[in-house]
Image 1 (cartoon, rainbow over the protein chains, first blue to last red):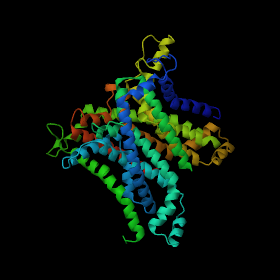
Image 2 (image 1 turned 90 degrees about the vertical axis):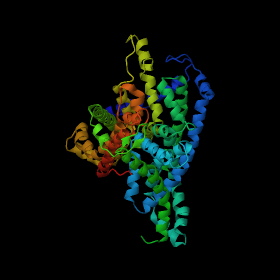
Image 3 (image 1 turned 90 degrees about the horizontal axis):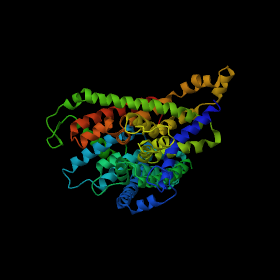
Image 4 (image 1 turned 45 degrees about the horizontal axis):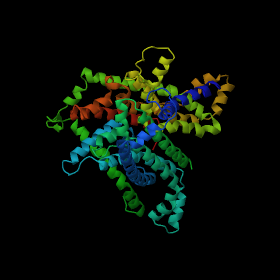
Length: 252
Length: 280
């Protein structure tokens, strides 16, 4: 078993990582076919010349940044309040938002928006996508911030109160700085789940709010496209970097 | 509740999250539940009267077959993930100082674009993909193998996609186990394999249950894996729901199918709470 385990693990890691590595290799292939034909950056040039891709990437970034800021603030406050005193209803609904199949979240939000738009003069667009992303990112933020709060010593807050801080002052000047690395990690996590979402986004997006995953999805469904290999490599490298930073912060 | 400063602060902190969850989870689910008991309107949409016909239609052999198929595929994917994940989690838990590195190598694909990870398999499996091209140029086969757009490809995509979901809870359980137990087993004459099956695995049951649920729930509701890798032939519940809300425009029926998925997810959630593998 001493030898079998590392050998098995090596294969498992290959299984997890080789498919993406192959995409990266073929993203710099000169040929459009699956035959190596020398190094070339032509697919990267094609990617930067594609207006559809650039516009959707810009939309994705705007949505992800807005959703991240909102979800991080709301989620951090929620984690703190839940840490002070448990609330089965709220914890339950956060869990529910994590386990609800994406397609169900998507159609229920769609049904909800269509229903309120009968009374409000609004349409599907960036705002509906942002709201949807805030909704499904909050639970991730709460999980990460809550994990850090578990190691926080309440005595520190009590000391601040004894020294004349208000409740909010103690939170703001003592607890919040302690939570900072977890909050940053949570924000990065919220950003990655937001920028990656396809199923929910595609259902609540309007004509002016096509996101990068929606364009990637349409390209993938049409078949394999070497430009998509380049896009994939950039996205995976970017998100991978963010995740590594986030993991670092969580352990800090 | 007395209105102490602490309580007021807590109420103030809870207001945004409660508002968002109510507006984007509670109300939408209530609407879907209501729709699932309504009739289909002539132009899509919903109308009165109330009916339970949408639910009885789910028992139609055509739809019941889709449900059974989805459950079966999700079950196979869960079993596949557990079998593949357990030894990997064991390896990480017993790898000493390099633990964090090995764990990061699992977490990385866990969070990097799910969509792109599926596309990577399309790139490998399609008729002119890497696997077929390689086999043909090696002279092993003459015509491309139909690797993509079938249930096998869906299963592979699910296992690939959700393997990290299984590794993490298994690792968490294994990491907590006292290595002294294995010494004791060895002292009593157990071989390492026997100790694995008689000590390590039985003690890992909470993690195994958590991993099963974490994989099974997204698998049974999957939409993109069957859509991208299964082609039009593989219709699972997720595709059925999507279809009713887009092209078929039968919202009440799609809502009924969604409610079944939600109820299944809640049941799993309660099951997990009993396993005491606390997440929140």
